[in-house]
Image (cartoon, rainbow, N blue to C red):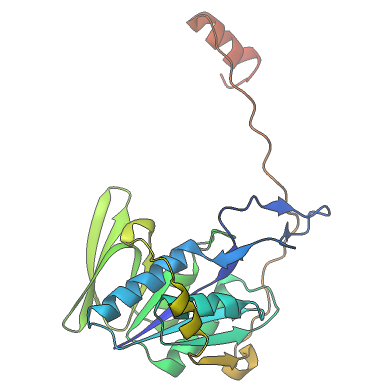
Length: 249
């Protein structure tokens, strides 16, 4: 059984993101980048299933500029067997990402497709759902537990009311949530070994996918600073401030 795991290079979650002076985008110059945390969880889950003898091969795939190779090498060091880099300097929207992953999936024919539930840079939470729709495949989103059975996968999902378990026929798309697992610390020998693992290069044109953007970013701005709260001496004073200052009643 083969698993395809999508990984994205994003600004490290410990870095305070700043907006460019002209408001055109986020400033990522000289900023530490790393694998999207939810994608780390996806890689870890695939590796654990392989260690349990449920999966025979893990293919990591990333879309973006040349430096995405670093992210793929991290996935290989975690336990992926080989990697595919769809190289492009274009800014990819979730639909374009889903189309590219669909093309890779049709080429690789995996039984499981793992994605992080969302990327921490755009917080779109769309790609996995779009990919499942394009592949006409069942999907298990916000997964907090994954179990492989005969010809299907049981996915326990986090929902507003608690948890829900769904049985999906293979091939299936799974998006991973925070409580699914805790990714392992990558050891130096594994990092060195990852350099020898195969990494295939492709371009969007090789996959015959149109990645033209369909959205226009008008402006990027930092959120307003939160104002400090105040204490009131009585209910009457609270009502007065809500009525005359906040003007919410």
